[in-house]
Length: 177
Image 1 (cartoon, rainbow, N blue to C red):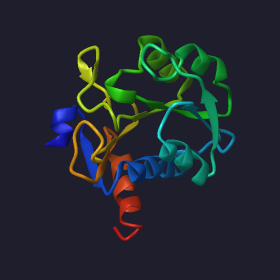
Image 2: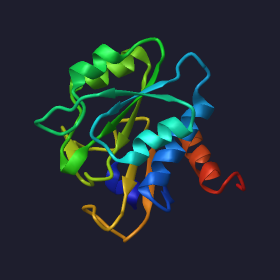
Image 3: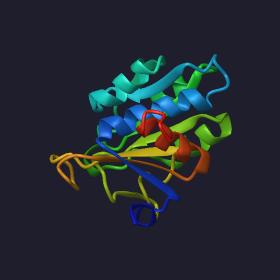
Image 4: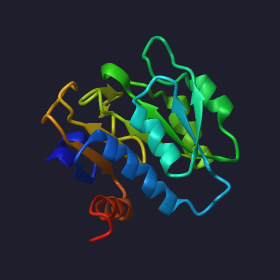
């Protein structure tokens, strides 16, 4: 039901949004065949687990400042920071605001750079006519009590990629699947 509501094929429930972040970046380690790509661009304003997930999985976080109109990444700075080492952009859609624009989506697709969406504070927010969390390779949600939609605890990691969803399930169950 969550996948249908969001507009993606697969959703895997986890114990927290922080775990969703960690599992997503851990899955990138499995998918990343080009070991030169070891940097992930993150916003200066985000939740600590976004940055910790990058560091704990052996990647280098590259920080960009925010756009004050939507509290998300400054897209111009993101594009300037992208280089041959950039594996992914880990965008945070803060406080219900959309952080995406067409230029970023097209640029990342052209450069074959993964987009990961942290939608932990923006359940149901949209860009164009699609919900946030349906644009990137993967998206993460939190149901922590301080967020828009709560189950007190819990999180979700979502994707349209069947193989990636299987990796999420394996990582969630500590390899026991």
